[in-house]
Length: 307
Image (cartoon, rainbow, N blue to C red):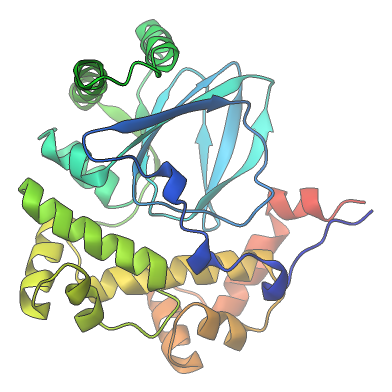
């Protein structure tokens, strides 16, 4: 029986797919473990920083059509705001996922190069396997029910130390994005305001929202909101909003057969011309050409088009 769902109507609206179950409480984290499988739903995204660890298997993640290959026994870190899904799994192993709030990740004061890499959208992995990682991840998972404040602080400290070691040892970049080399610093109050703006963008980017609307979500003036957003994210609010819309558009171009004009409007762009201009500037090719190239090589589509 064909499993073909390639119209926008058959695709869960991306603006409704913000995964709030992967957003931990302040000063906490979420840990889960399962056998990795192909996502049977559209790309999902969340505002948490995600730490993954595969055992006895490998897999491919698609970030709006751009592929990262995750190997076994390598700690992988990325910011979940980028739309992502599993497109291929090799082996019968398991994956353990740890989710951290963006504020927690920044408050640790980790080396700035690591923080900038993650917040700019890079997917990074430990440069080589470390046998201690499996022991650490297993202990964190086995002690997940110990949720007293003292245990939570201990577990967070262990995660923090592992990320510091990752920064010191160096990492491999599985997926890179252009970014500005600007100094990074932020107070916890500032991070809460930036998180509020990021969450508002994630929930509403398909709607005709403005910079003023985004600033209001953090109870700041547009000027102040723009300043602290750029300080933390190294891009403007408008640029980040455009990137969120383009990520959604790439997902629709790959996984649906909707007309380009429909993709543009469903991604939050005010007009087809504005979409073409933004897409071509970001990707160096037209949306139609991107669709043709991506759909020919997308393993998820091949899987779902089989009888």
